[in-house]
Image (tube, rainbow, N blue to C red; front, side):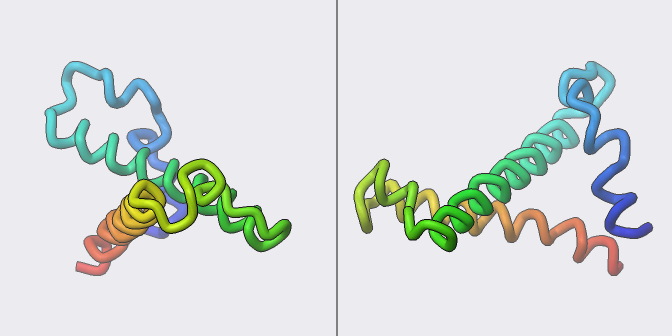
Length: 93
């Protein structure tokens, strides 16, 4: 299965999938993590785009340069990116 088909399956794109009563808890948790990772990608993309285009760091502006909150946000986004790599590694098996 190609990456396009993997990320565009009905279960991945259907927002009602999380609320469906016949879906087990583990599958719901995986869906939430998958959605969080994509939101993290969007936030990181906009953030890096603003830094590249205008030299404006949103996280530093909101929370202070080098603050603990800024560092936690960077770590969380990095972990979400690693989480997104997991399905690709599972596909190779």
